Length: 297
Image 1 (cartoon, rainbow, N blue to C red):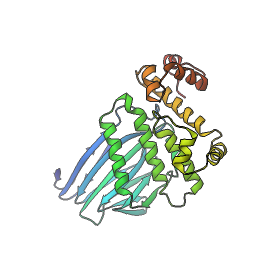
Image 2: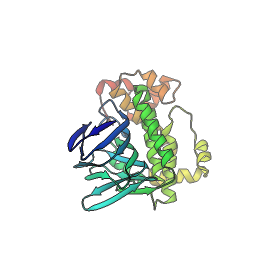
Image 3: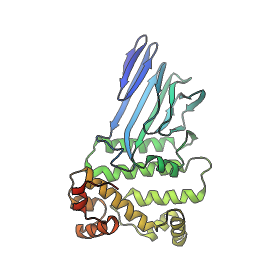
Image 4: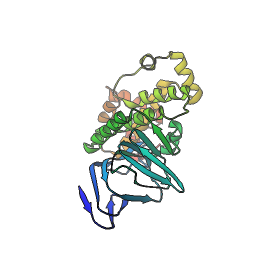
């Protein structure tokens, strides 16, 4: 807890906070991805925060360099986007896409508590468009507590970060965004079904997964799921899952020192030689050739 008299500037990471009056500010948690992730991985968490503010404050940033998700659990916060003001109260989620200019300040409540997730990655903008999170959104939902717990879980993985946790971090982040997208007003059921399927196919690579398993989890016929994937993505669900596995495998080979055996086990392959054969079939190169060449998808 910090007390600030008068007016001062407080630096927090790459942000600057301007305080006025007698203010109190507390970061309960702040966890960072320890490596440069924008170029290496398709979608990953950059920072997770849980913070409590009491008193008056004002914060401005020219534009966001990431997707920003803010979940307010107590009090309220006033966001400004140019001349437009949006008050975010307890039980609401604010979505701010990359390259959005904004500021925020204290609301009417004397104290506010929020969870924040910042997401980066090579495919961030296209994935946000897929999820319907490519515009400023205010979402009211009774699920805020559960969503905040998911962000805290992502923070736990960031805190305990090891290369072996990369698939779990990417899977958790993708799953969180897919679940959040289901709360966006106006999303079509057909699109939600595809997103739920993608979430399931990408969230746990270590577990054996079949089309029958997917259909049971979605309570949907196998032929309907196949049809949606082929119409929307041009591949079957299992081809989509294998492609995502190999995409992640390639990033792990290039950006970590894990062995081929370790990576294959993380992605659900008990036999590293079968994994290597599958990897070559999908990418046209062997894992060792990829590592030597440092070639990204």
